[in-house]
Length: 117
Image 1 (cartoon, rainbow, N blue to C red):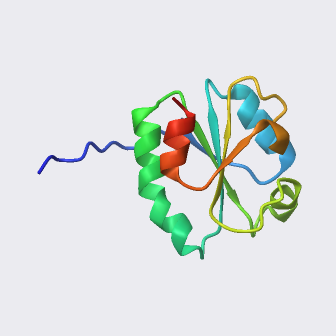
Image 2 (image 1 turned 90 degrees about the horizontal axis):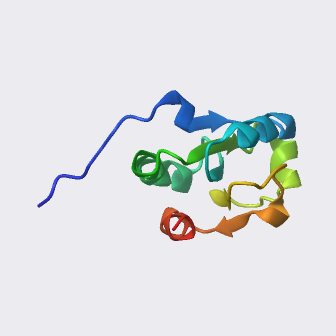
């Protein structure tokens, strides 16, 4: 059995956005694609996908992950029409300012990996 490669995320790989202005700043400063992770602290599926997102960030240092806690950032979740968690979006570089129309909604980390190819 092979050992799975692990690494620690650098703080700049994962951000938290609480409102649209903060999200816009993070996306504008991102060096590459951005994954928006709409999540909640009580969400089991959100917790379950965290290791896979962490590994994705390790594998792709150009990717920025932005966590949006829907309970703390209700207006942002509403603006992106998020109704269930977890919900993931991928924004390709150049999606400035970020909008739902420019984002690709995906159902899991495997789809995110495919979209980043």
